[in-house]
Image (cartoon, rainbow, N blue to C red; front, top):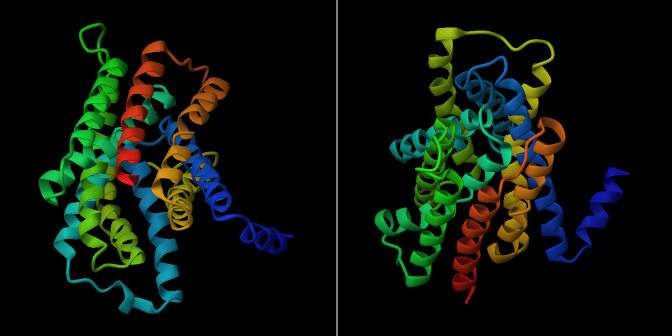
Length: 293
């Protein structure tokens, strides 16, 4: 039955196949968020990140051995891998920390500022042009973030600021990834990501070490596996369709996670979150259309 399904999907129009893979990415991101929320009740953020890297390293290592062994993992750019993963680890920490304290939809909304910060960093580090449209997109992103956080109206939760810093960390990692992909295979980048981030999560976790409860282990596996499947599905979708098609589909993460938060955690979507999210998404859409033209 699985083979028949795979064959039927392969016969679809590329745009439909991209949508199919994006559905897998959306489900994976949502599963990772729910897993992180559930594990926050018994594990520290560093412990969650350690187990995530441990599972990822096991899977990536097995794939590397199957596809050519250790020779495929050699690199001449280890310092750049380290810099990228320090930024990515900081992003991961802020993201998982935020999941424990603020609504899931708010975490995802703030995370959507990543492309906007990436545009700024790419201009500074990669000498990419900061066009008028990109500046407009960044301005809309900043406005949307301010509407969500509402500084001066109420107390901004530290977790919301952590997610904002996480978005900047992700943007830094994406920018450095653009430098790495010129010489490094995706499998190599993923391998060093899990290898470098493993001790980054382990050593701080030892200060208050604990193992997951029997009921927590399925969530640990869900976080580790969904982190890999989310990026794999996204990559497959981008191979089948332009970013201008795939990225708008990624926006469905926001209403999907809002629904999950409402059904399982009783979370509500405030007007400030809705308006701020629309401003951020408007900036991304404007930038995408300009890039396509």
